[in-house]
Length: 139
Image 1 (tube, rainbow, N blue to C red):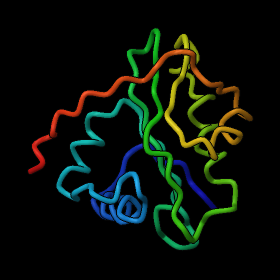
Image 2 (image 1 turned 180 degrees about the vertical axis):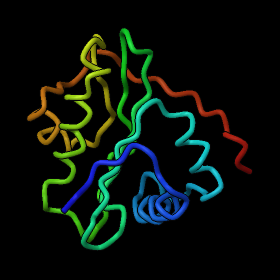
Image 3 (image 1 turned 90 degrees about the horizontal axis):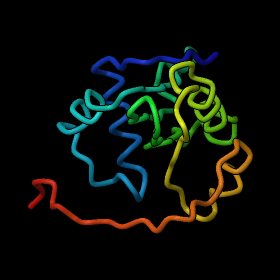
Image 4 (image 1 turned 120 degrees about the vertical axis):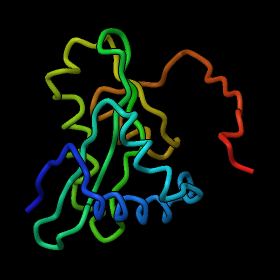
């Protein structure tokens, strides 16, 4: 059985960090940065496995509560993949009552994930993504 959680305990933060270390897009994240990352997110969605007593999935949202919300870090633990947990996370986001008034929900994904997100009403944006690296205090 899975329980949706909106706050993480210190042990769950460590479990999330271990999940981050397994992914190409987050493998350089430091454990010390994760609590700050969570504290500065507007909404957290965790899937807690009662069976394994571990964090099974996670995503987070940043929003202005009016025009934009952006989903970050959709991640499912390797031993829980293929069970629909990514779908559960996205459903939690798009059905969240506080996000119902937001003009649009955005996310970044790899091309191979595009069909998955299209099932939930996401479409490719017309805008060009521009990025300015800032260093982030990393040496």
